[in-house]
Image (cartoon, rainbow, N blue to C red; front, side, top):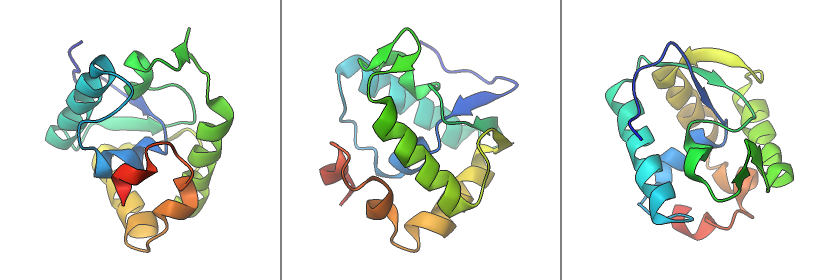
Length: 129
C-alpha cells in the first residue's frame, strides 16, 4: 500500500512514541513494511495534518490484531493512548501537523524519560530501551 498525502490522517496517540524507536521489527513483514512506509511518509511530510485519536489508524492497517477495524488488544492500547494524551495535555481527536505532534511527544514524554511509565508493559518494550 502506498501512503500518500491526505487532507487528514488518523494517528493513534501511542504511535507517536513508537515511531521514535522503530527498528523494522513487529508482528509480521507486512506490518513492519507498512509501518516503515508510514513513518517515512510522515518524516518526509511533517506538515501533514493528523487527527490524534484513540482508534485504529493508518499504522493498524496491516496489524494482525486488527479485526474489521477493531483492535484485539484494545484495552491495553487505549490505556497507552490515554496516557499519551494526558501527559501531552492534548484531547482525543485533536488536529495538528505531524511535526507539532512529534515535538509535543518529544518534549512532554521522551525528554522527561516518561516512556516506560506509559507503555513499559508493551510486548515491544525491549526494542525501546
